[in-house]
Image (cartoon, rainbow, N blue to C red):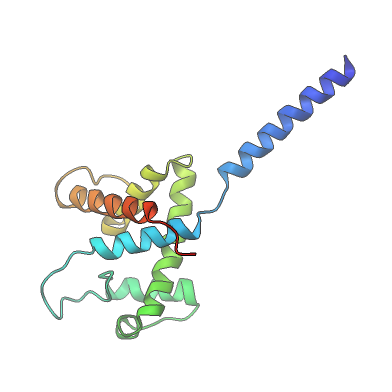
Length: 156
């Protein structure tokens, strides 16, 4: 009986440990790359050359400075960000990884809900409230692009 009890407790403990590890699984590089590309493809095109937004991701100047400082530990100017596609992608990937991880935890690993939350945050600064109008259309667009990217065969 004692052996049965300890085996049962060990099994429960292992099961709980496995669930905890799964729940804390960091976002994959594939997920980050899909989100980065979805945000790029969905970026609103203003049709203006000097619209005050930078790079393919249409990032505001103050955001460029804050994100570059967070991700690179040095502040870049919006022009530096715009003129270096690889650096811009590195910064966007860094921020996307942070936000996807946070949203996956918040949604208990619901990938679609996490992508929705990140897309809403990207446009508004809030993880929710993008249920109508322009922001809802934008979030749907990001989710669709994300799903397209996730279903592409790996090039590795």
